[in-house]
Length: 329
Ligand SMILES: NC(=O)C1=CN([C@@H]2O[C@H](COP(=O)(O)OP(=O)(O)OC[C@H]3O[C@@H](n4cnc5c(N)ncnc54)[C@H](O)[C@@H]3O)[C@@H](O)[C@H]2O)C=CC1
Ligand SMILES: O=C(O)C(=O)CO
Image 1 (cartoon, rainbow, N blue to C red):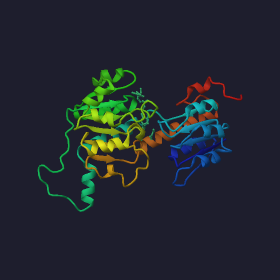
Image 2 (cartoon, rainbow, N blue to C red):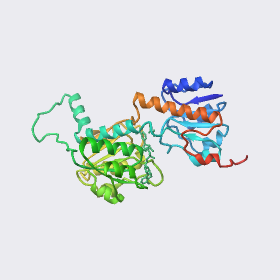
Image 3 (spheres, protein in one colour):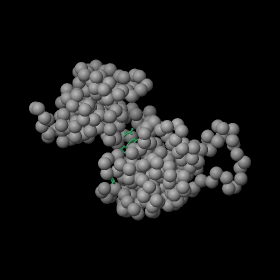
């Protein structure tokens, strides 16, 4: 059986697939395959392991022969899940193993933003150490402040735990469902979206990007936040409206922002957000630690191996595929 891998993945994943007797082709060019190229490459393969390629209805219609699609991510907003199910193709992802690393990224962006760290580093690089006076380059203290989590799932929980432990922060959250574990362990309080906006000193986004969450953080939302608030997004850039965020920061409607995700990615190097003192931006590295990427490659390989053995994927995005009768069958 043959597996096409759209990027270079950690060796541990390669080893697992090869030990299972699978023949592997990895795309090694440092550019993303176009949709058409991906379809062309998948011909003659039984499975594909993808990083962040757009897998739309056209892809699944063109590749009904695939026995499994494994994502090297927990997020699957890039996948038309219904089209995969219609084609009878199970899709797997990598939940849980990246929660610590991604929450750590949100935590680092929170502190870096609160203390203007990226901007000050840039100033030094530009030969501008500055004259140290008591009123220059002031940040915001985090001790005892209120963290608002939008989407208190696996990553949101770890972020909340870190903030409560490190800074004694009060945790409020807005979620589709109550998170009883967080309420018990962290005394987290579930609030409405409006209350989350109005009460958070730091508001950290941890939902998936869906039709419901797309553009949730817009002019109206930023307008309800505190002028001293910090907005953190390590989930997906599509959840905030970038033009509205830029305007909110320029006009002092909110104080700062830390982003690991932008819209589009990559962000244009001339984007005004990159020049703002209380903005810190990273190029979508939330899960990028050696340990986490190894664990993700392991889960993705396990999904591929299970799919090619006609077994249920251990980490499945569309479990309904097992009860659905594909068209034309
Ligand atoms: N920056 C990065 O490198 C990474 C980003 N991510 C992003 O983080 C997201 C979250 O990952 P996990 O915590 O593992 O997922 P999760 O499923 O454990 O948590 C998401 C939470 O959001 C809630 N939610 C969903 N829709 C909602 C809505 N409309 N309103 C309120 N709450 C809603 C869910 O009930 C759930 O509790 C992923 O979908 C992915 O997009 C994940 C890993 C790395
Ligand atoms: O897993 C995800 O969803 C990412 O964004 C990258 O790890």
